[in-house]
Length: 386
Ligand SMILES: Cc1cc2nc3c(=O)[nH]c(=O)nc-3n(C[C@H](O)[C@H](O)[C@H](O)COP(=O)(O)OP(=O)(O)OC[C@H]3O[C@@H](n4cnc5c(N)ncnc54)[C@H](O)[C@@H]3O)c2cc1C
Image (cartoon, rainbow, N blue to C red; front, top):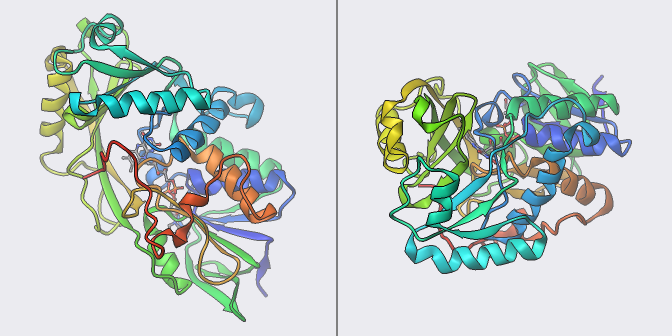
């Protein structure tokens, strides 16, 4: 005898639990099957940046819809997401200035609080920053970061409140089909039957796709981060920053600063590799880049460093929608940027599965079929993870 559900979600990361929340709210009998525990994958290692600055409209719209949930979390979800407003700067090279201005204009059209500021303005707002190597930046005064594990835990708790079930320590080992449509899954804890199965398995999603006979361009992306204890002269805090000049991002968290690099993120490794430690050489490179942007960080000290794995596609955009056997859906390939969009992606996918189309944000450009049709998603920065 197998357990039954209207919809099975494979993976209890922020994406899977967000979808569970939106489906359960609409009365769907949903079960989340998670091989470890909630936020055990990329979500638990995420840097949690919450900003809307992107070079494609679909990303900015998903981030903007999600941002409004992060800001009104208690009323809309309940529990804690730890959203902290720090202000956000996107720093670009002189070559990318025109693209930045066009992107901010696009954000303003959507209604996102964003503006173009001068390097002098950046210096006024963040006196510790070195601002001699760029002329303009995008500024989002309302943006910041949230706590990814808290976010996922709160979404799952809210989903359970509406009747969703969570089964942890439960690895999906096979996807079953009957007559060209999915009929359920085999797991390490028995079989589940359902006419709809959603793959939200993060860096492990390609192996779930293979269980459903799907071969899509989806691999893994490794990303390391470190926490540095800030020296007193930097002050109590600083804005969150993505810095294309130095292929770097950083944000505050209490007396610490979290740092990641845009380059040196290997593709195609096993997501089961050890990520409790950062790879050799990462900390040295990250400290050197951070000190170029914030020279006083030379007086800082290393607190900790580790890594994580996400799924990534060739255009570094997620796979959202139906693919393979009837009833099989993808919510994966979030390519190192799927935390801040999770509240809206879950809502859009719930609309797509239940109503036939997403209405909150048009996510049709992110449909899994785009690779077969040669319709990759691209933006003006062409600043992809390396
Ligand atoms: C170090 C790091 C920093 C990041 N920083 C940011 C950031 O600042 N902002 C941002 O927006 N994004 C960021 N990201 C990206 C973001 O964290 C991810 O895109 C997002 O967390 C993906 O969520 P997910 O639910 O798809 O995947 P995951 O959180 O990886 O969840 C997938 C889950 O599926 C489970 N699973 C896998 N296989 C099976 C199976 N066979 N059966 C059952 N369960 C299974 C796993 O155990 C896991 O819990 C970062 C990612 C990393 C790694």
